[in-house]
Image (tube, rainbow, N blue to C red; front, side, top):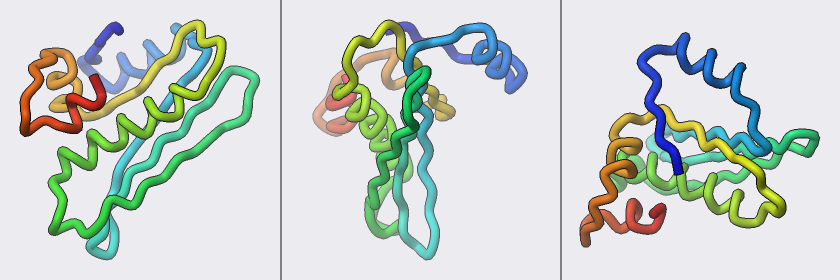
Length: 117
């Protein structure tokens, strides 16, 4: 696994345009009407676009950081069922999640991070 953190939005665009991969996974989470959820979209070169959504629950009952972790798990879940993977990219826009995965410090209170790793 390689972790790269872009310094600007322009760098993200440059990295994406110049580095083609077999599978691209984008994900996001959002809240509306006091509810929160996560989603992931997987696109394979020359293949159909697949989506996975998860309704996490009420916004006042969940920490947004955990909802961000769930979106990573959704993308990895989709990737798990893919066959013949050359190279895959899971795009993230949350530095806290990226740093937590990069540092790889497992702990009892980090059950979602542990699941990702």
